[in-house]
Length: 257
Image 1: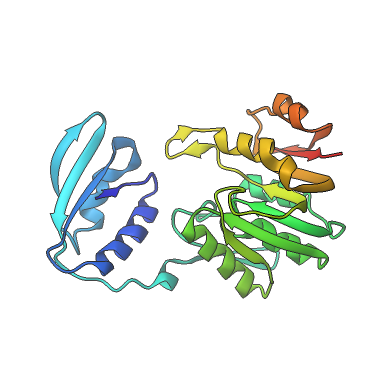
Image 2: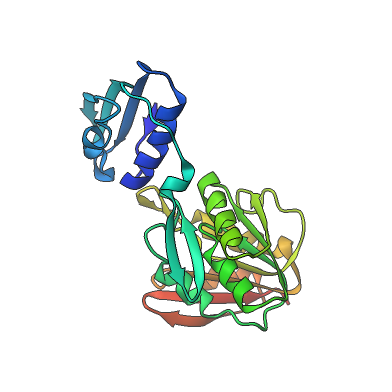
């Protein structure tokens, strides 16, 4: 049983992996919301599976079919490469920033400088763009990158490797696998859960960040300009401000002491 995501390229990427793991005549069910592009599933997968519609209800569709042809899954075939300021960024379908380096990440990166030093935590590292750029600017930082998505972790490691940077890449649901403190926490957090707006992630990043910051530590994150976090930041930090605002995004910074 496979739940179709909102991105077609991510669906094809994941299903090619699934098909490669199972024998011919394995039955696969695919279900998804009409708005996710699931109607294109039979066309995308026709080379390997003949899908038939089983049901259509509550704005969703259920397909089923049997694997008719095997495929060999090669991860490297799905990587996309972006070049930004002499940096090579590697990305996989479904990982934030796959199609291009987004404006929010660029805005946050534009606030970095060679003066940043110490231990830095990159939450929701995605392609590894933010950490790679910070390492490009400063040789006096020690980076830890975390994400709860295996594809994102693969991207971050690939980005670090191809640019010959060293950093620690950890599987962690926000702070769940973090057991040390940092001088700076950076993030470009998502504000969507599938197709719906969800601000729980950024709120958790803010509210729990105090436990993982050193004395005089800083939290720096980018968000869409339409979202305001003044009340929440005031609750947990003595000092905070909007560091930069541009192109529909703004960068907040907040200091522990």
